[in-house]
Image 1 (cartoon, helix red, strand yellow):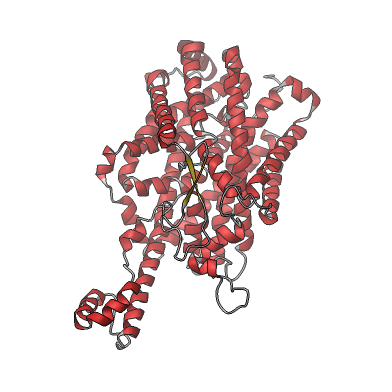
Image 2 (cartoon, one colour; image 1 turned 180 degrees about the vertical axis):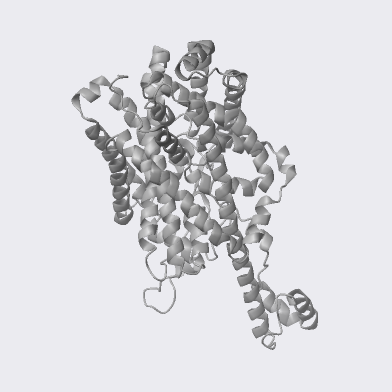
Length: 571
């Protein structure tokens, strides 16, 4: 097997494959949300500590196991101990679950990318109603970006019980996404090794372009000031530390078997310790860099909404009290409001319910993550930019590259153990195995393109991986340190790479990292038990006010189904 096993063309290909897999959508739409929720700059303290004691050591552990055993997850853990085959099987099953629904995000990115070439952007204005006498009622109650996402993209049903029909436009985009993944993995490391140069590097090019553009937007400094102003009291919040540990864990893609699969194609002498440190630092640096870009956009959007709100109040008061045009300004608004309230109390009381409370701080505090950030908040900001089509194309192309890069790792975690199996590979060539995996995943993934598909997407995203992955990585660390033997593994690494294992890695593997994973496992398990019934967010088309300033806004009412509850987690 060693002699016939394909290898990466260069060590750089391996590093790019790991970066392309690890740097994904969570870096763009989860980490900025956590910074916003847990103290801005102060969140970096628990985040960097968790990177040191959890992320980097466990990443090195998986790379070392894959490179030493030179097999996929099932074969690698079977080699360590025949009774540990189930660990590898569990990794493959979780990766299969993830692949089923994760590629739907790429389908949505394709859908928005195709629509980005229209002028004006289809989510920039509400469509006309049936008799063309005004705007669509549902769109007016929400916003044009929310309407395009929930109605035009998802055509979402009122509840999960009403499955509805397959939406063929997103379904065709899903087929296209799977076809692209299949072409990228068709010839194993030979094709994947070339693709990862693009999926790893192009998102950085787009982020740099967006950073330059974001910093020149009006109000960008408001967002950056909000991000970098530390709220040190959040360091005493246990949830800040738990979310920092969770973000590191899932951002690096631990437990799926993808890193083991990638490392199995390395030369045995490859310095995987150095590569583990490089990938960890680049992944975390990308999260911080993406947050700077995101908060500059946040600042622009918040300032735009704040100033629009003020202008509406000024127009309302000017018309209601027949004030001279230009008399009422932002600088004297509060003073004039006080005067009008005292001079014309009865008339002011009639107008008062229509006066909005405009606050830049509340706009900046609006916390959104996941698809809400990617397909609603960002599109809301993009539609107000000059040359909005260009910025929309760049943004959704970046999302597509991030998503495809992660999918290459997910499919590698499934395919490597299958192609390593002599029974399967003796009957089917590698191309056929890859095609069957993509075909089955695509067929099952069509479930997420029905009208209730987004509800199933949220449930899979919240519950398909969290506890299984924590348990898998916990068993991995225990197996290497206490079943295979830490000293034996240390001697294997020294024989392979020529580098001795220092005290830091041994302390993390043997004690600190497993204890941290146990703590996370207990927290999430108790959280599931205490919370009880699962809840999911449902779109209510009958609301008479704008929906969704906050992801937990009462405008998105919660529907409960049996055997679970709502909890938001990164991809």
